[in-house]
Length: 573
Image (cartoon, rainbow, N blue to C red; front, side, top):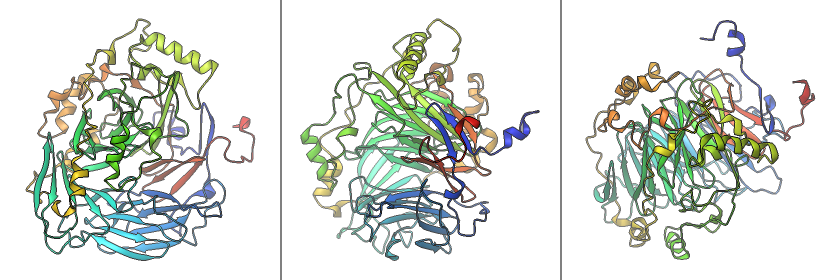
């Protein structure tokens, strides 16, 4: 409910907002939806998702857009900020019976003006490979649902590969497929390849090569989303049990973990340089985790309900190194990766630095990321030096950041936006300094299990039998009334009753796995705007715009400052 006196303003849908870099403006003519533009009745349907691909065609208009609404899947030319959307001519449209599309991903490596490979995951567990340009249905994976009967939650091509893709399900399992292989007519048999804390990886036991190549069983409850690191070497997974787990994808080693404040984690993303991971979930928070230090370095509170998507803005993020970066891998490591059929020649810029963040302080750092949630709000956040380098006294760090911004602001930085509990108190407080720095595990092991397994013949791969796992209570456990609202650390004991997993949340709270609220800096959003009538499900940062979408099936384009010709002068707003 809106507060008294501000009701009209509070519930008003915003069509523009201003940050340090200027005015972002909603472009009504660039809105994509179903051709009839009628709001979709989203009750009980899967989230609307959006995928982009650039076909590199000669016309200069190579962007293509795919989105799902209910049982329907659409494929359009995306004209962005340049021209109005023409909804009367979708390149491809599909309506499914008995199942709904839940997620999709383009293969950017193989996309051309004549052909594009699109993977689509479904609510009944199948995965379809289609070409919306040629309009040919290429292949259906898990067609008989012998591999997994649960909803597909996330599907992505393995970075740099033309044929390998990874699929996550609400069963808590992930499967690695090869488009060249069939799935077989019987349920797969499995043998254990590797086991660790709360995860197991199995290979497929069969005489002939078949899918899935690998099965990962991760945590308790649904595996809600995963994301590959910018160099494709690491995999971050978030689950309904509230855990972020980061794996070395090639060697199948667990690099580090983090636990939500309470409830499930729903979304995850990597910073453009691979040094930080941001998660969002049912605790209404965004949590920033350091890949190098394996610890929570900040939380952000601005949403009033579950956070559904987090994403970094690579075009506003600014990192200027004081001295050259040291990369973790050698040429030998790089060659090892090629066994996996992936070309990473262009990934040098994003190779992860294993150097401790305190050894080399960049001249100026600002990471911009955004989040959208079920509260229909878009939040933008800046992650600045005072949070990234907490060994400085906080009061000095804030001054330094402000001076830096006043003299030579990096693109989109806003040092004033970051506050910590007790911001007004001049003496420096320990906060994140007091947390122990966990040692960086040697996850970059050269003996890559997956490389070896694939090189020696995929026929040995298998997955764990669809194993009598505990009943998933997550839908019932995490009700809307468990939302954080305005949280205080004193209420944490009650809030932790929400999660029912093998790991007792009371034992993780106050540890590096899940620091208390007062133990880490609390970010405040740069902006927090209500931009839709229904819950938001998409946030994508493109070079000249930001793309959002809500559950009614409207895909909105927000022009970046200076990228759109505005009919009236900005000063009049």
